[in-house]
Length: 354
Image 1 (cartoon, helix red, strand yellow):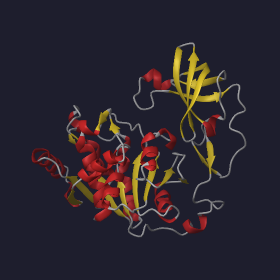
Image 2 (cartoon, rainbow, N blue to C red):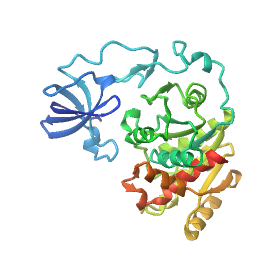
Image 3 (cartoon, one colour):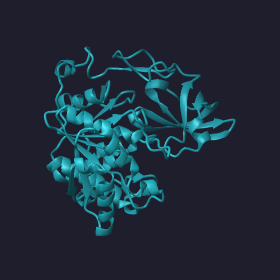
Image 4 (spheres, rainbow, N blue to C red):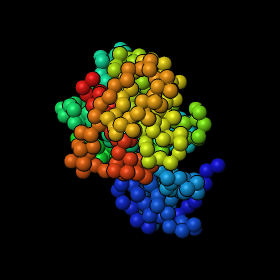
């Protein structure tokens, strides 16, 4: 069950687009709280706010903060905006958006009959942090490419929660965003992954598309109970729409968990169980002992039905450093687990040049 408290706002600071960070004094003590302006409305010091403290109670990493639900002393979010597509449907937090597909959208005509990506490469990732490596890999190999990012609803739902995407956009490595399903807050809104892909291509003008969930994926230590299983479904969607499907492997030699050593079982399962159509699976250039383990895992998982290619991800890491970007994953920086971003950079390079 969710946990809630009511507290008084001590200070307000803007965090990212459509998001504010609040210092809240509560009966449980001071709280670090985030609020989404489109849902909360204006908020200021002295206001009483109702806060969802479930993430704090559970001790979560990503998402382990309080979230302001309502400002008891404020006017609320105001009048309902344009759009008739509702996200977070049938919850107290449902909100309407102007989806790119709907009739009132300026993109409706372009998308009304769109069923093809016209060969545009689509890189599917299992982790949000991999977007940095993929985008940098694309940027290093094809500097003039217009890169689109599709955030699925497999993890964080508000795009504003991602400081990574904001940093990549500011660095010129992501040019247009789209949020699909119940995710919200992108430059474009879409009803599902299929329509999100064509929206990025035909409304957003993307030359290459990167798809990943937002921060905070779920894993349970079981064969199928993890959110990034959707990676295989995204790859199939790209193939069905005449795109060029490219899989980004989740690789780590720093993770102590056996199921994530080398190639994570999340990647292996997504590609062997969920992905039914052949795609390009990109192996990064690594030291020979690590590369041999990766090849063995890929072979044992039966991924030979896919197109296996090797690419160098090092230019992506160099570009991230040049642009001043320092992504982390599971609390580890690039230098602590370079193979994760080398794999992502290699996938980006394949998308740009393959």
